[in-house]
Amino acid sequence: MKYALVGITCLVLILGFVIASNYYKDSQAQKYDFLAAEDAELFVRAHSRTLGSEDAKVYLVEFMDPACETCAAFAPFIQQIMAANPGKIKLVLRYAPFHEGADVFVKILEAAGMQGKYWETLDLMFRTQNIWASHHDYQPQRLWEILPAAGLDIERIKQDMQSPAIAGIIEQDMADVKALNVQKTPGYFVNGKPLQTFGYRQLEQLIQAELAAQYPQ
Image (tube, rainbow, N blue to C red; front, top):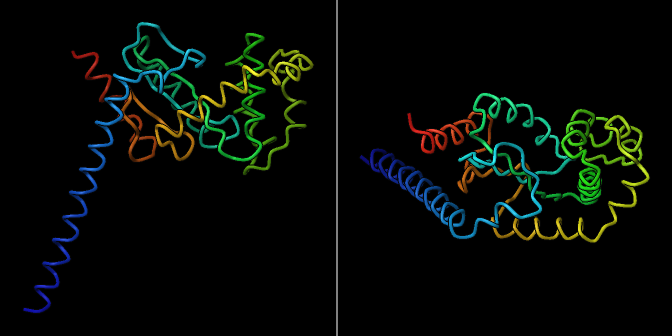
């Protein structure tokens, strides 16, 4: 009888934890869904780099870092999902350079954008990341040797990356990171709904659920 009571007590505690956890996740999703409607600028700023149709009804917001290995790993996956749903998904990139020194690479990327080479440079940075940023061993000098492959004027990059406007972009994005409680990169939101459990399958499910809601058959 004693063991049975202990077992029942444990079961009740586990059940209570599961219910509380699900309630927290639901309340968080509702919270961010509200923010998406009422404070959309937390997710998409005027300076935000975007990819996809202006008519897309599904916004995939990614808080990222060019030196983040997981961000690089997820990039082809996101490209595949967008290609499979042409015109329906808009990718919005925001910055969260959490690690010391990582903001240098954001500045380089934004300076490349001033030459009209943003996406080409990001793709190149991701593909060569193991050379200049493996396991947070940041080596900007090695990146400088690689960047000309994107057709960039390197001297201009070095000047433009010092722009106060770029520093302002990072400052604003980090403020939004704090407001949205983004803890790590990549951090994903789909139409304001946060990715609660990280993973390829979970992100795809979140995107597909929003596609189904916005584009009913």
